[in-house]
Image 1 (cartoon, rainbow, N blue to C red):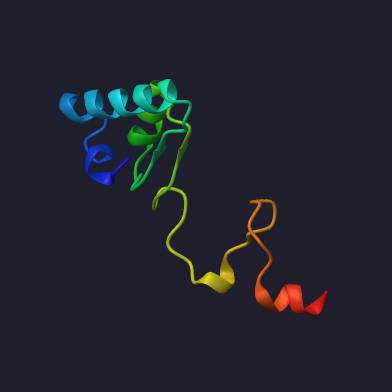
Image 2: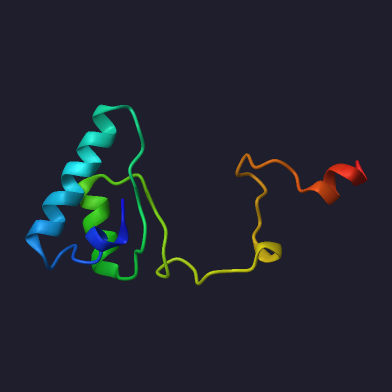
Length: 86
């Protein structure tokens, strides 16, 4: 879900209600709920309470250049240079 809703988690009851509804809708459709733009402990705690499946944002890591991202274990296809070497 968009960071504009995540931003007010724990402080804005309307944002918390929207996030709860999105998580519920995703789960009822058999989908995972993923929050973006997570930056604080309060947001993480609220997302966990609401049953959000995953999150991304500065709370976890600052942006990295592609060559610094470890894709091992994520099910991502091997990079072209790795495929050529095998």
